[in-house]
Length: 185
Length: 185
DNA sequence: CCTTCTAAGTTTAGTGCTAAAGTCTTCGAG
DNA sequence: CTCGAAGACTTTAGCACTAAACTTAGAAGG
Image (cartoon, rainbow over all chains, first blue to last red; front, side, top):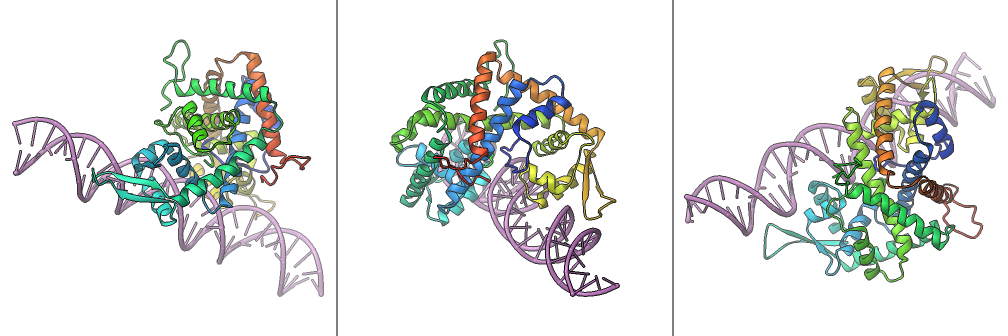
């Protein structure tokens, strides 16, 4: 998948067709597991496209929005070094350098050397950057609320709890108390 | 994101910390909604990294695995044109041309002109490609089974059903019988 | 002090993608 | 027929990313 984060394809088979096809080609496949995994993947791809469309309307890319989010999440005064940003976004420092170049050119962030330690660089959110973040956040939360509209409060809770359990399994990469799934980072 | 598919960052805050931080910065955020959405995003990023590692051990990239999966899903005789592949994978035809170049060079697929209509090109899975797909599929289904290990059969069913409902909402982009969420493709 | 080491960013080379222009068949109309 | 238009790739230009080499500031040892 990949792709991450990979992208959507209008003319792909329906989820049920896809699962049926996999079962034809690969006998020992648990359809229940496949349903969860495939739905997860598709849902994410669609959501990423939707986010991209929304923030594009604000004149920023999905990539730039990620940077804005990370800076805001770091809390006031909304400052992080390129290296730290790169780690949190899962990019190489080299990619971060260029992304910051662009964003500084657009006035979303500033880039300055740390006066106390001149090896370090400080990337700081500008007011304009914070405003963009807020606008994007409003669009995103409306979209997300809309997405979950058909689920009751209880269902949302159950879904969140189940997803968090999966996430824990993947993030802690279990100390192997029976299950594998090691080495994920 | 976009992607989708975006990549993981080891040193990011925990999910709970992240949600708490968002609430500090953005008052009218529903933490339940945010939990679902953020967990979805993270889970997917982690899974994509895991898939990438696994298929890399077989000497193929995540991108190549996607092509193999699409060809197998099309059913015997495992043939599709570059345009159709591109649509299903959400790529431009140009990207598909290059991907097929590489994969043909590695012997995973063949590329031939259609004798009945010489404008068309036929990409066909080779035996080697099919073998790689099978090996990758085995690794993936083991990994997925492992991921869901902590969930009971009932929980898996509930999770799958809830995800499918979200997916339906996003894929059908509702004819607007009250809710928005239009224009997703 | 003066090396040497290490950390933080940047630069370079090369890959894979998109958008847009180009090529080559096939089909349809006059 | 033959000319024009459409369809299905391919090619070109340009962008964003990774991996690896490079630069420079501060830290550690002698």
